[in-house]
Image (cartoon, rainbow, N blue to C red; front, side, top):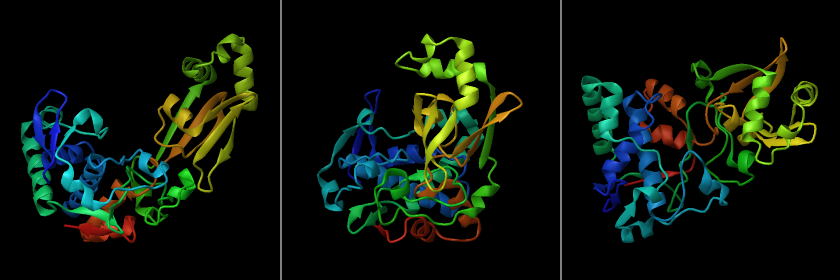
Length: 300
């Protein structure tokens, strides 16, 4: 790969070893060999893309930037990059061992290294540019397009069926909170201090009577929530209440607020749970990637 990463502790690491650490950061849903290969290619693509000056991750920042991607020819001039500038999820082998125990760690490490060897140098491209290989943990039963979420059309980030995801234990999550607890969380997150200036009982009354979702996408991803003249984006609400995604609905439930969330992540690109399910059906890594990123190619 020819890229060296300067880690936060000052040590130098080969780029491919960093990619292995990226893959190790999200293994909850990736168990099958072909799914792990596909996941390794996604991680490597995102690493090289960022190293060449573009942002790419499950946070979809590059897609928000009108889908601009880096030309594959540019990576040859990249030699060194600092970890702090990557903004990519990463788990060290030491952390992996601490989290899993020695025996399980050795098994996981070997699987990661085998997947790295089997896909070495492979990246996902579209029209000779690095693809924006977005991913998420669990879909809502299908993936959604970048156009729906960010109003930016990317040819390979379109909606595809991923109905096997409904079988995941993380497909749906329910949280029920008393309104006074909801209020406290909102006050804590209120930068303008508007809610804090209003009487607590009055605030709770406002929440109970006027809290509603006012804008959402066709597939239910929340864009705006209002309570009287107070407004939050779906992302803000997700962060405040630690929800799995912005695909949720709100309802009164026995005098409390019930929040029902579907899916985990932004729902664009490859579903990790879905990729593993396809691998169980004997689909290859290449087939899985072409399914979730139609029109892309794997470049060796």
